[in-house]
Image (cartoon, rainbow over all chains, first blue to last red; front, top):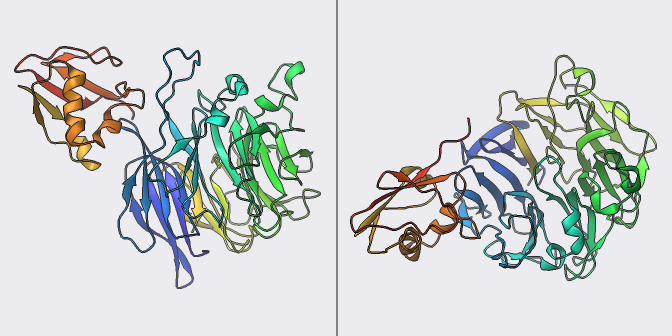
Length: 362
Length: 89
């Protein structure tokens, strides 16, 4: 669906609708509450919203196609921690950081990535959840650490449309992991990434990489893109290995990436100046786009603020619709912009939103 | 019987009327509330059974400090207030 979108923010879930050729904000759900993630499921039209209630914990709600109201459903929850466990991690969901649909052949399957690093799977549209123990129990998890938060988290879940048992997840900071058997077994899949925030002997360690966001193309699923803490990487074999792309202008630092659903050579990024200066380069906002697999990029600025702009786009703050042309981007400063021509020009949707965590179409 | 009174802030998400219980400990009293209102559990406790960090409980005006065991005793006419801790901005 290309004419409806959602923005999950610090103070509610905002809907966005195109009517009579114009985009406008629509009804707001959970006004005042932090909504960490939103997912629109194209298989059945349901929308999922993850709440991070400051006092009362993480909650999950679903709005079915055609329904007027949201219904609270089960939230992912860790099992009781064994008394003899030596795991220093608190087995408690701090944050739902990613939601993803299972394959078209798996109606009802939904994946959830959380802080502090657990992956959960539901087979009944979120009515119940199971921790994916095979990944949670991996000895390598003890080496993961927080990137942006105090604890590690799973922010990206890519399901291979050719084979729903083939899933890749991105972890800050725990690299990328892949399963070929629906989650029964996992292996690291961050070969080629490098981390200059680590001691020299661990720069290439796959298990401590900080992929800020990993996204793939629907029609060419082998092609994945990663905005990493230290740059941009791409894969042409669903993460079996990664190659650094050094041609992006402005900065190689940022969080978000969106990939054209029909063309894995086309991807958009929202660069920030640097790790230590998380603002647009020269305080002028740009989206960078490649259409040739990273050989070249174009900086797109038309309609974006070019003076005194200090917005940061979080890792889920940039999305592309099914048509590959309509883009939505929203910032930590509460600005939202939409493009209907692949980023060539942008229109402001709002300049007074709460900080936005996540956007999606559908 | 002890009385458990829940913050009206919960009403944004879930009904939580006050309850009366002859439980002898705080945890047992909370379990009485959860028995009739299972969804309430995840609003007050995390999945390990500890009180959520930003939920505050007072028994007869005294702050409950142990958020893990929740084994503070309840007297016959105790008034237990389950409230939001002040936080955020």
